[in-house]
Length: 204
Image (cartoon, rainbow, N blue to C red; front, side, top):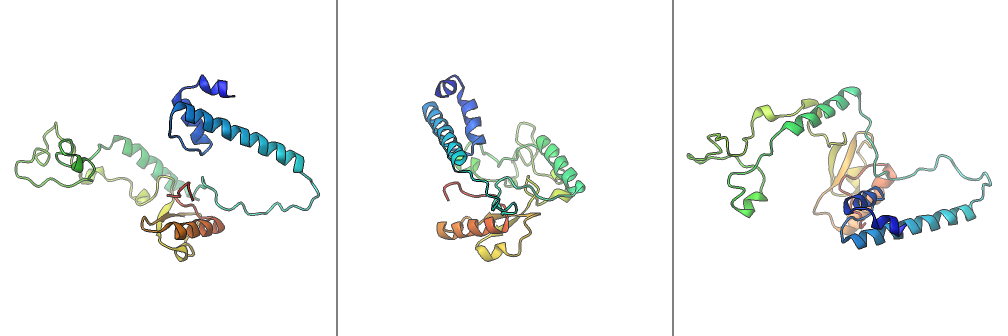
């Protein structure tokens, strides 16, 4: 198996790692070692499960699986069409950059700001400057505020915020100031309720 990985490109190896939900950082040798280790552990687990399997008819079909990382929202046809149309419109939308973003690094990391200078070339809409934010660039109203997956994002700071959420239409986004211990509690409670966490960390 390692010989097969050696013949593959780095891009192909990263695609396999993404499919296996594994880190994609490192050199090619690191990627190969990570894939080989994962495939070896999968084979060992399958052999173990085959040996230990005992169909005594005592298992339950309705056991809850907990958190599903790729859980899909329940959407009507109109919302699906609105999301699809918004995605198509977004491909044609220019990238809005702040004035002089190419000159100063701190401005390149900043978000959009409307130009106000009297002689500003961007405000005067010179063709060689980046585009201005205008009302016409707005997207489909029916899909406004929705995550690309179709969920409506709910900011979560503690486990109590999860209790009022609808798992079929809403997904949680944990606040950036939430600590590791509380974040782990939020993940556990979200798993119990079947709520998808959009910014779930892999190390927790």
